[in-house]
Image (cartoon, rainbow, N blue to C red; front, side):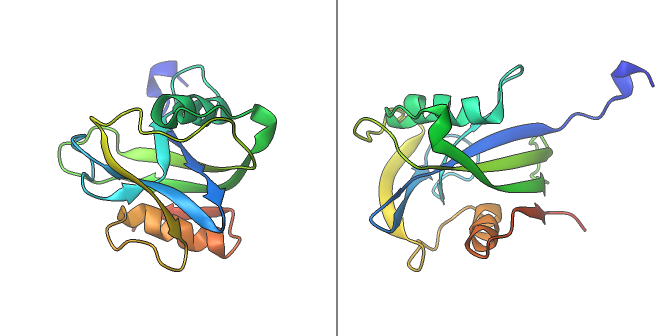
Amino acid sequence: MNIKQLHGIHSAAYLLLEKNGKFLMMRRYNTGFYDGLYCFAVGKVDGGEACSASVIREAAEELGILIKSEDVECVHITHRLNALPGYTHQEWFDVFFKARAWQGEIINKEPHKCDDISWFDLDALPENIIPYLKKAIEHIRKGRFYSEHGWK
């Protein structure tokens, strides 16, 4: 097989932070991708970067907190087809990590991309959540490690 024929899939790493039975969610703003909807802290995995390293990096960049690698656990993976008009990155592996502990106070370090950070009970999530994320949360709650979204 010619190396140029290999199929490319993108990866994103999501961070689930839980405190007092509530989960931290951020409302997207001014990004061009699901603006006005809530999601977990998330970032695209860079080339040459492990998914767990990506979620640790994103925690520092977006929330100003430090997480040790031994304090993150993969809790779910979604293979997603993202059929949004004009969006070039169509196929994704979304990897969800739960942090057992972190250091520092959570702050919004990217107010130009996020206009709200709030804690939500899983039984009282906001209505405006990214649709594929809402499905992933359902799978995580049921203990399902793998799901698919957007495929026919």
